[in-house]
Amino acid sequence: MLDTYASLGFSTVVATPHVTIEDIGYQGSISDDLMRQVRPATTAFSISIQRAGEIRLDPGIAAEPHLLRGYTLDGSRYLLVDFSSGSWPFYAEDTLFQIQMQGFTPILAHPERYGWSTDQRYLATDLVSRGVLLQVTLGSMTGTFGKSAAMNARALLQAGLVHVLASDAHGPGTRLTAAGRGIEWTIKHYGEDAIEQFLIDAPKRILASEQVGPFVPAHRTGWQSTLRNLWPF
Image (tube, rainbow, N blue to C red):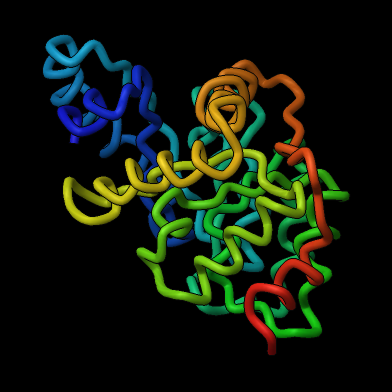
């Protein structure tokens, strides 16, 4: 994975293993042990690795702020969170609000894969207006997760609702190699400036606990209208 990241031009990688409410109390110490084993290998690739977590949200997890702090992105106020792909649970918006009330800024991973129904298309705009950041997976841009995810990812980007792109790699296989294709697709359609904001400027601001805004295309369109043009329901 380090070799592939280096070939793609990455200099910093944030490791975000999934963390559930069942393992939040001990997952951090396991990750710390693994990080100590991995870090010596990073020298040859000139890559810095930071340890965080991807928090699987459920109704009770916001009650553990002292534990959540151990999984923020490099000790910042930003917390990467997700729900199971393909579903948007009834408690999602309230749980995100509770996380914010604890002083965290949630970054919602892979919003393009939640299978929002037609009458839920307002959710992305609403979440961003409430201060939630959206992180789209690079591979989604070119169809790695299917047609629906690709359409949603492209529409979110065109609507100016995406703050950061990420590999969301679980290993050295398809997801990671697809990141390179996602970078190429983004440059082709939105230029080098877009990739600089998504992969350099925004991550730096996140790790420094600074304010982060979404990338706004020159010709921005609404998410719902973009989806109708790309994929009629």
